[in-house]
Image (cartoon, rainbow, N blue to C red; front, side, top):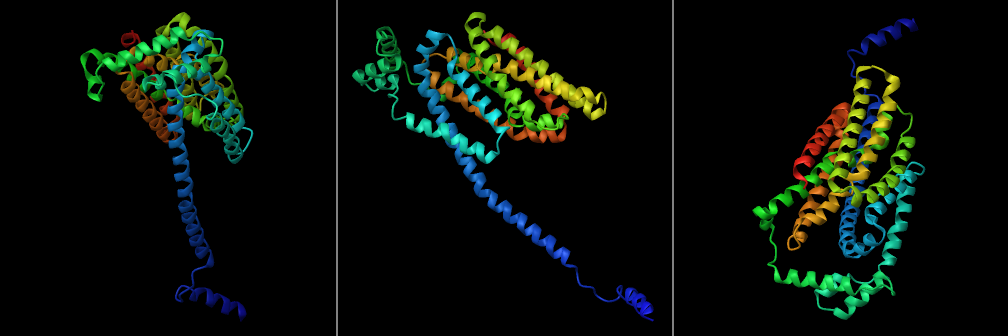
Length: 371
């Protein structure tokens, strides 16, 4: 009898309204928690954006300050010191980031920020700016302090004064002046180099290196990321040494060729993975391709465009032209960083093919455009 009642009760469930289970209520609660988490993340996003903006402003200020002070260093030791230190710092961050959590990495990143803030109280004002505003005594003191108390600054001081007098005589450059026939070739070369430097995918590969290695079949991206960071410093030193000996154009041509080969090898590795062919070769090709790419980039495409930019613009438009070129560089960096992950999700081989096409066009442009 009880069995018959149970069967009848089971049949009646189709007719009787049954309460929804508590699991659904729990799912709604989980959804609400997810929404709350997303809303809470907005504050973190805004904070990170503010830090990025301040960092970009600080980077630009450091470049502007170091430009006049680096000339003597380059003349003395023949190295692109600023580019070397930039690559060295990023390499250290890459390596440390594979060993610690991101929170610890952020705390470690505070150390150089605090050191920079403290160091600002001990460095002199820019000598060129002091000379420009007419503080001649302070100008000589600042220049002597930067070069060393025993250095002879008479020739450099005379050159700085001559450049400032020339700038005061020349008409003030406007943005539309960049499109005059006598300047447009230099602007095309400078802007083009920065466009192809970024469209080559360096920031996408740099920011997502760990994900790329994992996608290629590595159990972890740590080894590849450490190699990625370690190879930049020695290759950048080699490129800085060869820059004045081999010339700008040959070095950037070799660099563009190397990045082309690296992109091709990486694209082939993901194509093989997508087709299910030669699975054992996929991680090797991906690692080799990215190492070749970053090595080739560090030897030329990383530093040479900035050096060429500082040399091709006439003195009267160098400020506004340099600002345009830097703006294009940062916009390209943002565009590549934003779209790279979407391209990898769409097609890993396709993203490398896109970078490869840009690199090929860069190679041919360097042949015909760079003097």
